[in-house]
Image 1 (cartoon, one colour):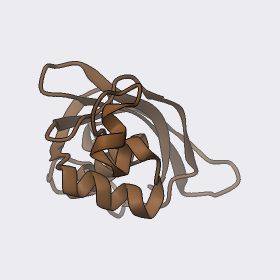
Image 2 (cartoon, one colour):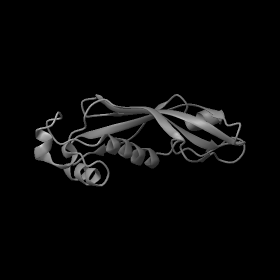
Image 3 (spheres, helix red, strand yellow):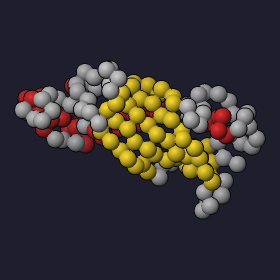
Image 4 (cartoon, one colour):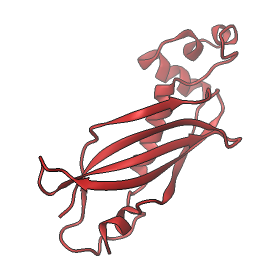
Length: 155
C-alpha cells in the first residue's frame, strides 16, 4: 500500500452531515459571532438574510467535527512500509468561501478531497498534505468551500 492509496489521494470522501438547529445556531453565535441575524430571529427577519442563519464560522466548525469523526484512511489499516502515518496540526487554510446562507433547520453534508502531499525540507519525516473541502445543503447547493493543509508524519 502506498501513502497515496492510504490517504485516498484524489478521492472525494463524504465525511458526514450536521443539522443547524435554531438553538445550536444561537448558542454558537452568542459565544463566537453575536451578529443580530445569528442570535435573534426577529432581527434576522429584518436583515438581508430574511431569517435566522448560521455563522459561516459555525459551518466551518461543523466541517471540522465531521472531518475528525471520519478516518482519513477510510478506516483501513496501514499496510505500507514503516510506521503508520501520524496526523499533526494544520498550518492553515485558504480560499474560504461562504457561498450561500445556511438557515435554521438546514442540514449540511460535508466532503473532503486530499489533493496530494509533499515532503517538508524543514521537518524531515513530515509531509504537507493539501485538501479541498466542501459543504452542500439539502438542495445540493454548495454553501462552503475551502482549501487547507495538514502535517503528516510519514517515512
